[in-house]
Length: 313
Image (cartoon, rainbow, N blue to C red; front, side, top):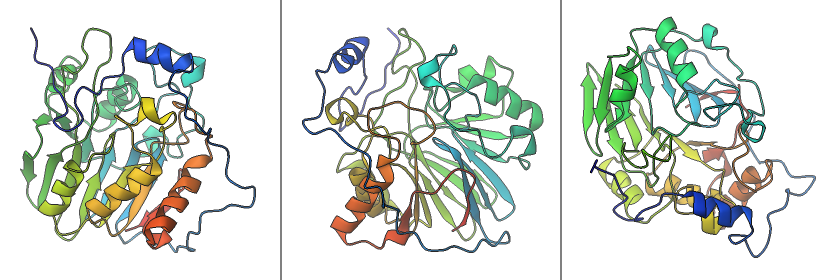
């Protein structure tokens, strides 16, 4: 039998077809439905001046960021396709266009790939990126290099949790996440999932990947590194909680991760681009605001920015 990966602290977090059926028939409904935020709500973000000479991040959508620092360009979970599914499904259609066309990207040095779900690993995007930038170093979880090599891409490094890839002044360490994997009914959890910590000369970046929350893994990341200069943390796809919580964190749990990993500045992701859950699309920033208020944390240390907005960090 092929090896299947699991979560040491969250158990088997796979969401099966039976779970999906129970969700769609109301068995997982939250006691109190989430509504859109008040009409006059806007997240209390400061006015920001952008300096192209400083390290930057721009959200492409969902879990895709373009990061630039110290002459490097890095992509996370690149998805440019119109659908996050193997065939076009209207319910899984992209809700906004990518703010930067694939052909307009700078030379990409690294891609950090957290797991193989269709909303994070898109075959068409990978094919185009490899054609435009054949020198990319792909960093992926255990078991996933075979998928790339079947497509003629060999510059791929698999990493297990706490394993590090080093090249010059850049190191990338795969870190724990609580999730699951699979692109069909037959390959569930046969490849791993992870987040990443990337360290360059003067900056440290944490890409959370796709994850539920537990009180062990993220504190371990925070214990290993004294701070993160930038955290990329999911704030969407969390309703209904009983169904989503094992594998997706809510804004409240995102703030826990932000605190656990000692992030000086975080940006929200995994919302607004694809409709994969039941919270209103405009709800995650409001729940993030409530969570930051409850923890008495400065709002400007965790922002829900719009796609295409360049942010210094």
